[in-house]
Image (cartoon, rainbow, N blue to C red):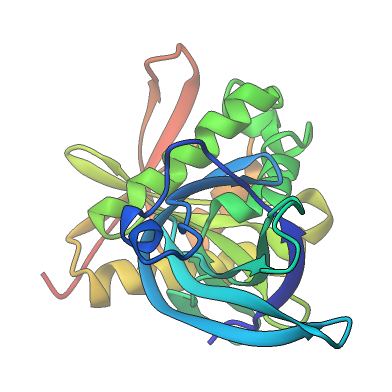
Length: 269
């Protein structure tokens, strides 16, 4: 279970995106979509709701409406709304009280691999906008803010197939080190890995990729995995070799970039 983070920051509900059932009961309508820290979140389901009474300045009741929700990108949040019947003219605000990120899909001795979420915007942007890391990826240049936002949203959407690219998280301190995962590339599935430069050289890439490889073969029962590596990316080539992948071919991809394809097969098939 992931650790719950206490946030206590205002959120901005989108106009018209409210629960009409709550309004009919005379309660503040839970927003179905809202913005927080520049990201747009959608409520997938309400886990539970509660109304608690308190006091304001010792003489008037405050109704605090809590809603534990899960968003469409699998973040668990607790939202609340303060309502003071003695001060109806006061501006009403929705607040994000707590946040819990998704549980890991894969765990190793030092790492956890979990879904990216829209709440990971800052860490994701740091990764895809790192000049040294992007030297071997994307268009070999850092992504713009718009490209990074599109990439984050697409990464979240792709989990609908049952797997995807996962954030690599340090189990000791919660830092996001990079990402590793599986990308559908019909007729194949591509295994990927990348680490921010300051975390390279400690075996994290192999540890994460090896765990993904085992998950793909043992849990998902995939028959084969491929990896596409730039010829100049010696670090990734060494990881591929250590994973038991064999070099298949050199090719030019759809963007005109020279790549080397590696593959490994599931011996259980």
